[in-house]
Length: 528
Image (cartoon, rainbow, N blue to C red; front, side):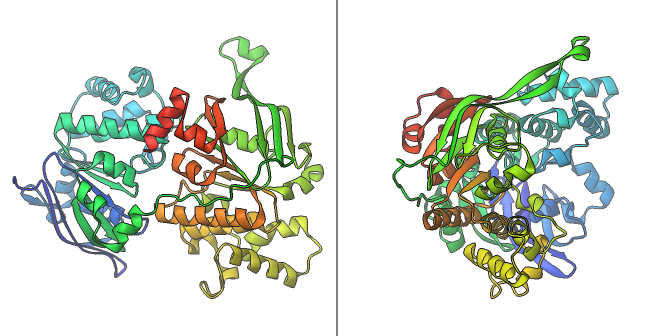
């Protein structure tokens, strides 16, 4: 066996005297793909950042040999020469990693100017060629675009182009596909594999997605609470895991546990010819006199009965979140839509009673919960609106009952009611969001990507909670997601959306087991 390209020995990382990575050892051969796997807080991202001393305010000890050099022993100047040219990194969220004030082409060209000394014109031409290598459409035009003008997949391709600009020998990829749809994830993995094979570089992939590990990596290393608990070839570790934590990760695929009740009931939500159109500015002189229209959701019909889940699945831009906002009466729409037999009027006072029937749980609990409000204020807010006459003691009792329903209590979290959202984990914050929705005793929950921001084990817990609440309370769910596994576990019926149109619909078994449309087949295959 050749000498390893990267050899990490006894890596320890501390913040403020508290050690978070405990003596990690692993190595990476030239051209090899190693996946570092674990949940949020396991230490995998800190480990990757510490290899290049990118972890802010961290005390790093141990040895990180890259070829003949120990990266931790290099001076700041020597390390800057390594970063980007020999070891490059793709960060998790390209929208925050890319500078919003410069075009994508400028940012890629800057790397080539600084690292390879190319002239401005040469570096811009090379940036366009790099974008073309990633398969981005119209690379010359995209090079002139700012990050906000690109889709999520295009931004990630631009990040990959920037990382590979100097043909590094080692690529650190930190959750490079987490924010992408399933089909885009597959495209990004195929792209990375192709570029990795062509350039002969090694890849350290940071992820919690075992689907990606199976499809991409040669070896896998599993981290838990800052310890490396297991590593080996992917086929061996995932087929015959030795450590309980590895087995827990592998067993975290969502499990179907829903009540298959009769659907011959009056619908709780019904829509006929429901469509959503946005006004857009027309180019040129025409835009001075009239506006154009963009159809986000083409006219569709849907029916949702009590105690059942209608899943809406599709990629970003398919119109599924727009449909959810229309269902909540938050967007004007064409056609008819009734919830509990009543249509949204668009006037707050008239719709107040209907808002108690239909509640929503958003994708990211950290941004949907006010950081300035306590748990008691957040969960009890709905009661102040819908039951203003309730005494303070009675309201607090209802808040505690709602929190207990979602598995949060004073025994587990002393001083629970006075805590703030930042004091909880992602899964616990999502439980708070569900408690806030449940406290007014709704009949319908609109779930907008309720688990996409969560780790696989936490996702399984939250889905189990939603399944239990549906069985106990007869709740109806309108479930918006791009995750086919979540649809398979939760939904009774499913609608597949693409470009604002419903391309296929029916029972979850018919649509996912025997998909008729090519787009549905591609979604199902990407999740396999």
